[in-house]
Amino acid sequence: MATTKTRTDAEISAVIAGVDAGHRMAFHEPDDFDRDLARRQLRGDISPDDAVAAAVAKIRSDHNL
Image (cartoon, rainbow, N blue to C red; front, top):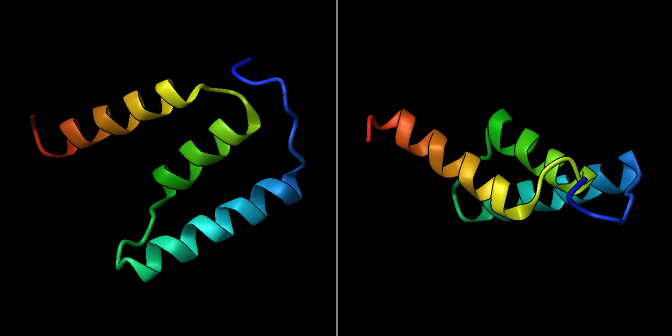
């Protein structure tokens, strides 16, 4: 496990709602992949480094890089 802090589903939902709001204000609507990745990180399933690696891999795949 990537973290020792356990967050409740309610805490995770509140963080995701805040992230969604911030992204909307920046005119970047998060997609399901982004939300799932954030939830996995907040639950401690993956490390921040793993989350970044997954996001970069998706971008590279989406743009044939």
